[in-house]
Amino acid sequence: MQILNNAPLSHLNTFGLDAQAKKLLILDDKAQLDALPAVIEKDEPLLPLGGGSNVLFCEDFQGAVLLNRLKGIEVRETEEAWLLHVAAGESWPALVDWTLAKGMGGLENLTLIPGTVGAAPIQNIGAYGLELAPRCDYVDFLDLTTGEQRRLTASECHFGYRDSIFKQELKGQTLITAVGLRLEKAWQAVLDYAPLTQLAYDEVTPHQVSELVKTVRTTKLPDPSQLGNAGSFYKNPTITRTSFEALKELHPDLPGFVTGPNQVKVPAAWFIDKAGWKGQRLGGAGVHEHQALVLVNHGQAKAAEVLELARSIRMDVQAKFGVLLTPEIRLIGASGEITL
Ligand code: FAD
Ligand code: EPU
Image (cartoon, rainbow, N blue to C red; front, top):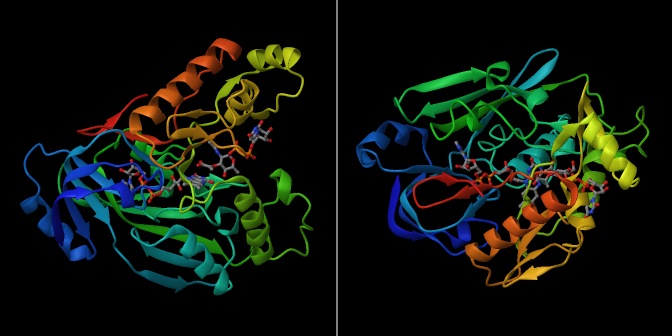
């Protein structure tokens, strides 16, 4: 295990914000997990980190960042499915491409989502009508409070929209080490999301779905290597049917997706856009000009500027529409996660 002191984090977060960690532990072998307790001080704040594509470093981290670089993919095959055991430090988008190249369908809608496999269950990554949940078999993790290695089945992970047990009861207590995936051989396309509905269900291949998703994603979302960002800054809020109908009367163009008997999911991007924030800048921080839900770093953004912009947007949307936006991105303070 490599241990670095006062390590820069700017190249380890896709927002490209400047920050440093008091200690950076680079884990690239599962055997190192046993040695962790010896190198971690008592009560030292710990932060597992994968690709840094869903974090905002708000200040220097006064603890140990556990950089997950555990690698390896094992495949077992049954008559019905391919069963993958994937080490947490593998790249998620590379895994999707790898499965498709091997003729295994199932992950194509989740193509090009940045980050590591180990982070995928944390917010139950989702895109274009599919989430990780239905493809996840189990999650292996190190319990950072007891040092014990444990496994949860997918149903024990309590997956929800951008949510799981790892953001709730087990928040801050786990280092995910591997994820089990089950890809059915009887592949069925998931084509419910608007741009995919143009594909012919009976003829389409997983590869074609992936190619279309890649095209749509690259036209909407900024490439972090060109323009720092962490994807959607806020989650899409869920409101009651009554609130939705009241808003719809005032704004007939408001989109909404019924997600429960009295629940409608509304696009945060629509509210931010409608409130006039698209393309706005605050110092080095800005709102992406093609996707209002994505805050970006125009070059030298400071965390304080991103936070001020994010708070101003949230206040404005609440004042104009009565809808509260909550961040999807994880805000990291000096000793752990903080709120907006
Ligand atoms: P990190 O940013 O490194 O970490 C995120 C959180 O998980 C942190 O709290 C961290 O402490 C914790 N964590 C990371 N690894 C571990 C581990 N091994 N064990 C325990 N805790 C851990 N997300 C979607 O769901 N759908 C999208 O379509 C999507 N599109 C995106 C597009 C862009 C351009 C970008 C930049 C991001 C996008 N995201 C999307 C968000 C991001 O890709 C996902 O949240 C991804 O799973 C984050 O992976 P990561 O390895 O970078 O996690
Ligand atoms: N819209 C606007 N203005 C904009 C952009 C979008 O009004 O600038 C409206 C449009 O009406 C559009 C709707 O918002 O129909 C939804 O937009 P889009 O399809 O781009 O999806 P999103 O809700 O902005 C969500 C996820 C993305 C995921 C896409 C595709 C969340 C928080 N975000 O974005 O995930 O890739 O759907 O499934 O759920 C991420 O989590 O980081 C992420 C990028």
